Length: 489
Image (cartoon, rainbow, N blue to C red; front, side):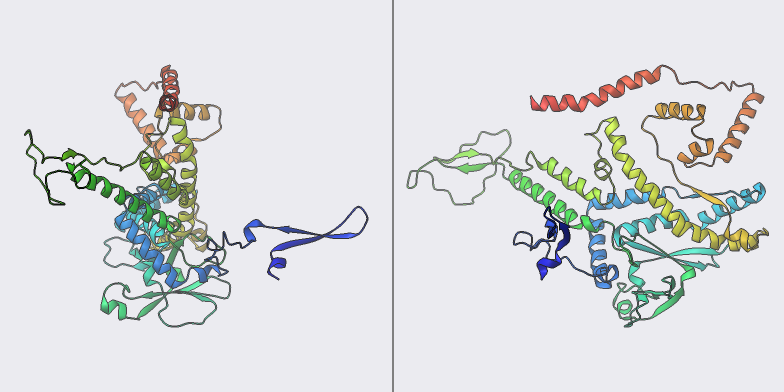
């Protein structure tokens, strides 16, 4: 019966007109003695059942342990948060009322600094990487010291849970859903379960409406309602890398600790000075020392680190970074083996992943925060906005731009794009995370002041220095090949 379940059958007509059954198999669906152990843990569980509360807790604990003790894991999580959030998002309104746009943009910037929004988003992004998800609660903070009292509080994933037994099919651990699959409430423990004996024994929780809770995670499967650490596939490799590094260093250290090893070439029963086994001798520097008769000094040959040590670590780190769309030079923070073109090519996938993550953050986190903030800001600042305006307030978010390795080439390409009308100033400034209206007004003020002071405003066009840079790049690209040829020789 199992054989027939794993085959595909189709009836076709042979040349003679009679029907024949064609059976097609998938090799990966066959269970053999060779692959039985490899696929032993494969299951048929749903997304929520596979990511049950116990499984998520185990993964969170192990991910946090590695991030706290593995420098590569810590650096990866920090890099993801730094490149995704940066110094924080900036708001630009796109309504037809410039004075209102300027008022609300300045007010939101002031409020975001008061609540340390960029810092909280940075922490939330780190929590997504090591915990799998982050929760934010919107609440009224009377002690904020700002005209707008809306605030954002971060909650660890451990606190979002339902301590009581529940057999509600429309509920997942800590989250209650309506019949349409929308979250309607979250159960949040009043104390962290790992906060001590009293906290762990407490089962008290608060029910918070979904309108006040932001749940930021990446759903890898349809029907998944809770997140797992993004570094989950790399956890065994992190542990392997750390054990491998410690073992190599320990072996090298043990060999280095023995300055001299005494050995004898005398045959068994031969004449040699009697020496107690494992006896130690102290050697003074710059002194001639006579060894016992029949014994000669030697040194232990250090076998670690081996010649393939760097290669082994590189391959492990490369595999670790793949599940996070991180190239090797980002994971290792080392581009010594790259040339200019290879470095930029590897970064394309990484920067695309960052843009996708930022877009998701805008939709799930920032737009929710902005909607709650705008409803209060309209009352505080006396801005007349009806319900339709609040819902359809046109806006966009600016993030930090990525610095170009060669600013001269980027400036030349930018001038070319603007010259042939394949881009706009808004798009070019957005690449740098800047508001084009603010920058143009600032530039106009600078040019006006320069004319007033009699300073030259002539712009310097890209010169022949670009050709020199191209030659330098070609030489740089050729260096790795020369190194490889010299090694082969």
